[in-house]
Length: 212
Image 1 (tube, rainbow, N blue to C red):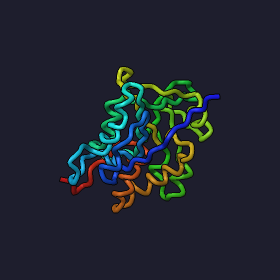
Image 2 (cartoon, rainbow, N blue to C red; image 1 turned 90 degrees about the horizontal axis):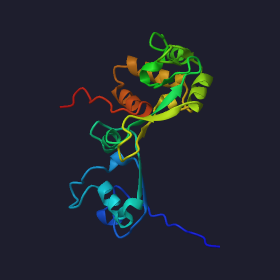
Image 3 (cartoon, rainbow, N blue to C red; image 1 turned 60 degrees about the horizontal axis):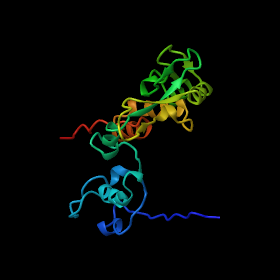
Image 4 (cartoon, rainbow, N blue to C red; image 1 turned 90 degrees about the vertical axis):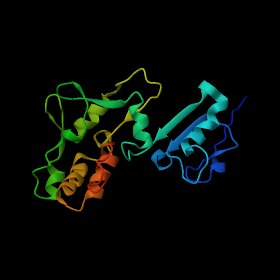
């Protein structure tokens, strides 16, 4: 019986250029790509991601590439790659009106008029953007089980998918709403607002107020 074996090579995005050389591979999997998607001032070569992609050249069209990252900025590697991709997104199927809908930050409701963190968490919910129905966490789970992935540009060569806290069943609506409530009321919460945009909603955060 023929058994096929594979080899896993670990390539560092932050080490010296030579650490990303001297091997060939069929598949490249990168995580936290925004951390090493730019040319280093001390390097005479291309950016680390381009160096890693060069490892695939021996396999031509048979090679496969996979990239993952929290969105950092509008000019960050992952956001630019997503904009150039199929721009896939998850559509929920509403358990009430049965419409396929995109659920995002605007659909997290019930927390804005709360007078405390606890109230914001207790009263938060996602609302269907088509019929306005208030979803329980069970409804949201069902809407995902019945949902689908759609793409804005089917002709793009790169498959890209964006998903947010609304598609994450490990985070309740109440948990996310509590974070939003805190960020909206603390004058020193610029870092939290950036984290919410990046880690919860997969969108580039606005630049800091003092950015030039």
